[in-house]
Length: 379
Image (cartoon, rainbow, N blue to C red; front, top):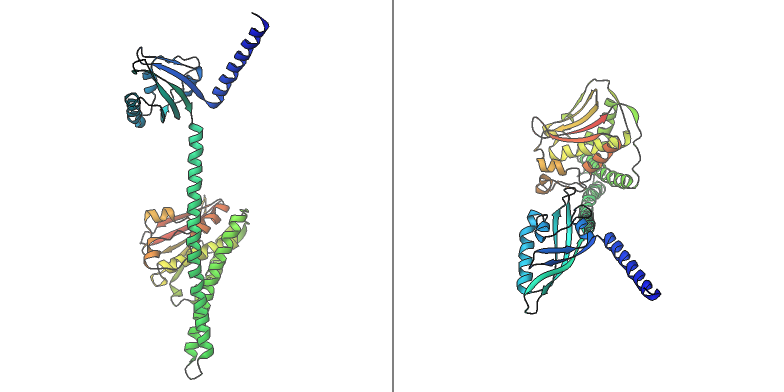
């Protein structure tokens, strides 16, 4: 063999090595099917693509068809019949159950027919590529896009809802303030004036609660800092939260039952965050159930930790609503049906606050009807 022939031989060998390496990297195998003799010729990578042991020889196409996922086999068989009937090139994709690990793989197959001089189909030739990773990445991208679209819709809904939520108390404040300043002394009795002032205070408190929720939502999204635990006198803490909530301004305030056991109970948690959470849950109980039916705020310790809970006796929540209640901006059927005001942030924020404490937010149907919301703080 002369030097030129040797050089050509080396180049061909190098090219073949590079081609095999590229095929292995791309998980791409090639094959030729002899339909007359039912024989399959293929590259080593073809077996690997289909989850067969290295060095495996696939002699019949039926061996590959047996690997195809049951949900895909009918479609693939129909496509192959059409390829032979129409004498056409094809590109298809199907799933297989890999025999080496039992996992599902996605295979993309591109092929064309081989005919004899008379035009009779005598074989197929083509490539098979494992595209499982690409399909998984595509699915991740589709999920991310769907989540992004959902977030955009939630944001738009939130902004529209927030515009209404802010205008309502502002209109109340300005309206009652205008009455106080424009009515003359003969028409503005002390009782009327006090009623207007109480209405302004309630609207102002509602506005404060909305703004607090928004600011806390931004804070928690920006900085998932650990909760700052302090020792807390539970009775004093609950009393302070009720005061901040503005519930003492309500005519049925006396229907709030405080049930703390033991009476001198203490706990450890971040008072600022948990106060905001308790105010949100109390606000929901008042809006959805009403103070006239009674609301219980309670506390219980046990070996695992301690439980702070709010229980109302309203319509309650469906199982689906309980499952979705922690989603930002979610509003239940009752809120929509009765046009109950709210941002849909309260329970979502409370859920995140409890996560910061290493605890959990539990929402259950109360024994006597209504809803029970529990904050669990682990020991």
